Length: 570
Image 1 (spheres, rainbow, N blue to C red):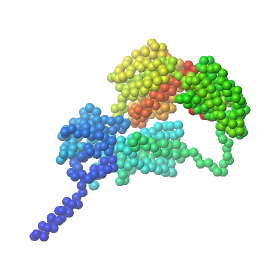
Image 2: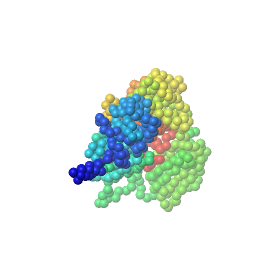
Image 3: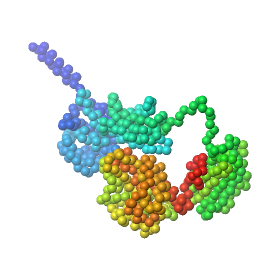
Image 4: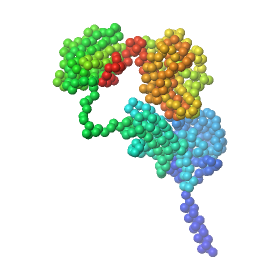
């Protein structure tokens, strides 16, 4: 009888020792729990508060109340307050009800992880077979069209760990981000900008719980990846790959003007002629077709012309500077034997230049570069009880508009312009009142800033510029070109519309739609300070460009004649 009791006792002991304890994994770090996880309804309660820092969150407790500073998908933060035993909670002061109340167990606060994961910008997964609860920070993806290709921006609240590679047939590349979540089964994003056709996100599976990003390419491409913001932002830059040269193909001459001679060109003479008070025209005479590269340093006010295929055969007297308001001194470097001559032009004040060239000469028009004599009205669309468009995530158009306007005001004032704002805080202004300050002050320009939206989410993306009257057409075209360059979104063109604020303004006026708040990629960009600063800088450059035509204030690097080829201008 005693032997049977001993056997039963040993079997029971083996079952206890062999029992698998519950495991909590947060951002890839695993811990064995002393007390088991609690399953209630569809949720799993766990003592996760001490590990929330791994998700980029901060938790503090005060009695039976816990306050969590949690990251948002847009890079901001939200405050969540919970109380043990209560289903009522707050998210940035707004009340909501949890399906399961937090509870205190042996001095530890157990939180409902599935209900809180989306608020914490995380994903909760539970494996009943291994009794493992996994919390992973979510990754968000956006892209920017750039001059040399596409940049894919991957952001996470925790430092990213990844592996990457490129595949062929068809061309594509991939990145596996370890210990991350997606918040959905999969996601696709059409790009259709060379060399990227589409972005695909899915759970890669495996022991690392990776999210896989696949970039479908239009053809061979180069891929470079850089990590910033403490490892929380990965920027993947993709550019079309130049085709391999055919060894059997004949060697072609270097590009240049049609008929450019292979022999070096000689610089023969210079002329500097004032063009009114604010400009001078500089002409460089040559005996052939010169190549020219331009660079301007605003700090030293030095304009440098480099002639890669030219010899310095200029006579010393050609560098003498006659009295003028723009050029202080000229100096030539290089020899009469080796190509690569340079002309160094020291300016008396910060200036811009226009450049062109033909078969035997290079011409520059150099002059002042300022918008200090302009009065500019900046209009932040909506305000007060009029929120404008509201994204599915709650982003309000009026807030984006005002932030961009205030950034633009700062840049314009730094340039010396007089700036008038229709509103500088969250105030409602009637549409009929918005053109009044500009009209009564005889302003030079009116710019209204907005964000767009459509009834169907993710159906439209990009940037538009609107104008109404013919006097605004040129300004609209120049402004739109600068905004597309600055924002790097889809170019939706310049359009005519009967908006009151631009119809009733008596000066050249435009209404800018920066992007679409109900498009997930556009919204993610609009929520970043970097993107809004680029918007402000684009507005300023559009004004500078228009000022060049209206007030003879020059924009650096433009040409006299768009039909004349220019080697390069910086």
